[in-house]
Length: 205
Image 1 (cartoon, one colour):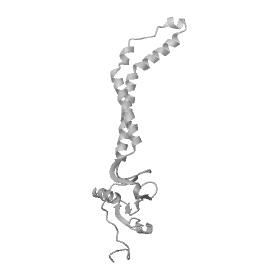
Image 2: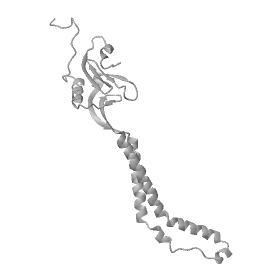
Image 3: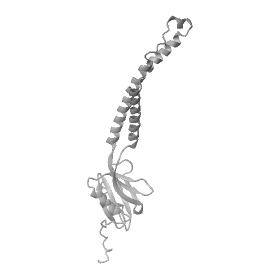
Image 4: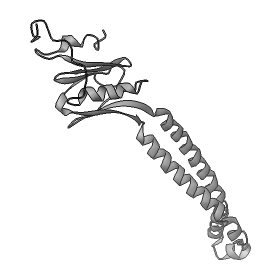
């Protein structure tokens, strides 16, 4: 059922439709008392109503999953720092001339195993700059993927600002004039068309 076209069935006594704006699978109906938003293609409830005094306006804006952007920035920064550190510090050159292999003398005093462990640690330290570059590159790749997901998640939305409550979001219409039409309808004295009065209420009848 298209509730946007059947919104007159939701009106209170004495309430009249001021403007009807279809948007995507739903739309917005502005009455003399309320704003009725139908959002079947969005998450959450399919319908919201807001008293006209609480409607602050309508605008189009671009939204996206902000947590993806945060993760992407963190990963890119960490990756850049790791790669820069790996390119700047030459640990292999610093430890290449150090050798703790003292042969039988160390074994005679019982520290041969300890010196061997230290030598292994120096060998690992010599490869640390390569590891920094590798993990930095992986972090940059991860950040690029997450940034691509964020850009893909961005969507242009028609947002109706509601005082004291969550804003109403609908898919942005292709016609930018719809936003001006809706803004004019929700603002007092905005120039939206008022629906014809029921028979018998016309003072000129």
